[in-house]
Image (cartoon, rainbow, N blue to C red; front, side):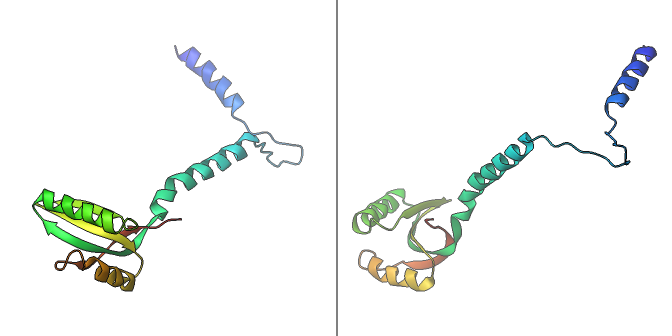
Length: 136
């Protein structure tokens, strides 16, 4: 058994030696496919991190905060009908449902939009700091 291990060790150690030219320096040969793999990995990283780059700190308007799910769905339908450009976000934090609207970069934009929403929802509107989605 030990003879076989010794022979295997000698064979493996003979294959692991680096190539040395006549000047005593080491010559490393790189396969061209490594560059292709590096480029492919860069593309994969670009695609997987794109999602995280679309979300930035910003502001949303909280329209309603209630434990009644039907009220939140009704408010969401009103927002869709009156303001189709503003995306409503429905959140559930037990025991309450929250409806937040819009993706605003500045608080001033959110406050101007809140004036428009006040026509539909006269009370209970708040500007909330949140992570918003931006379009690239």
